[in-house]
Image (cartoon, helix red, strand yellow):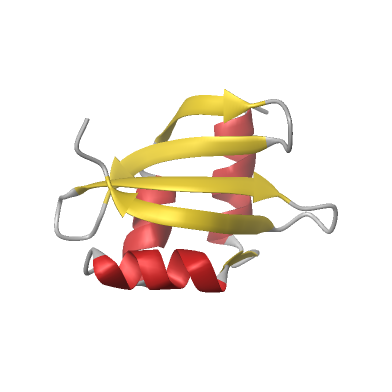
Length: 89
């Protein structure tokens, strides 16, 4: 299974959470948890960081805007969303 498929499967089962920072950043760009969820489920991995095992996922919010999500899979097999932003690249 590819890493994006693994992340998406965990999100489909509700095995993810936003850090306080990610929640604050999402609100700044007028995103909510459903936008983050949709962004991951429609997204692709654009970048990875081997140190810390982080992934940048870019997808679409519910209103069609590009959304960027930096996350990682924890040792307890959950997706930890570290930050969220409107992707303008």
